[in-house]
Amino acid sequence: MKTYGPKKNFLAIEDEHSSLDTASIAVVSAPYEHTVSYGGGAADGPSAILRASAYVEFYDDEFDNELCFDKGIATLRPIAFGNRTDRDALDMIEQQVDALLDMNKFVVTLGGEHTISAAPIAAHLRRYPKMSVLQFDAHSDLRSEYQGSPYSHACVMARVADFMEPTSITQVGIRAQCIEEAHYIRERGINTFYASAIRRGLYGANWQHSVIATLGKDVYITFDVDYFDPSVMPATGTPEPDGFHYAETLELLRGIVASGRRIIGFDVVELAPMKHLHHPDLTTARLVYKLMNIAHASSGKASKVKSRRSK
Image (cartoon, rainbow, N blue to C red):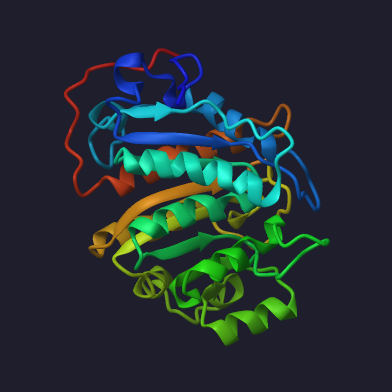
């Protein structure tokens, strides 16, 4: 598997800390976009995240470390899908994630449309059969098919529920779905935390605790950036009003690890970059790095590397 060098890799770090042989973290780029239903551009998401990451600081004050030097982060070259779509495209992603998990890497997958998430989830499930999936999203993505395709981005969690126990899926931030999806949630026992219920205080002030209580010990996170409010994240194909903000989201992510659970991998999808509007790309890149830091918080140690970002 070929990797990017310092000019294109995540955080633009030197070879010493981005070699696949030595890095503990591996970043997979899956620029797949085949079933867009509103705004396009998700195929450009992974490259935009990598470009923006060159302006993310190495140091995290919360953990007093430079994770990229402590653990190393290798960035693989993007998967070239060619004419492959649907199941064939997912198989390509799954094979790459499988190979990296076999190498004991912590795998981060960047999309692309949300369809891609079924592949890394399946790969992780084989190694963590009791894992939970925590889905950040404005949409429940539980349609049996959409616009004639069962592999639409609007169906990804239905495809995940085909191969894992639906009660092991937790959704947060949902505020747009069809009635069939609402019925599916009730009938299959999916843990869905609607945005309206959270905002109306149905889970109390610490709604994050209610979400965490539904999760098992091992947690895989799939993060569709349209979970955020459009004021935070306008650069996505299907933005929805009444979304969530960055700080309250980090409280939930921190709480997962503080509760004794562990984040075993994650994907971030559906960034659709907008020309001349850079903050969504940087926000997503920072989210990716912050998730890495939180996932490694229990074992992280302060870095002894004294490198500094040169702006």
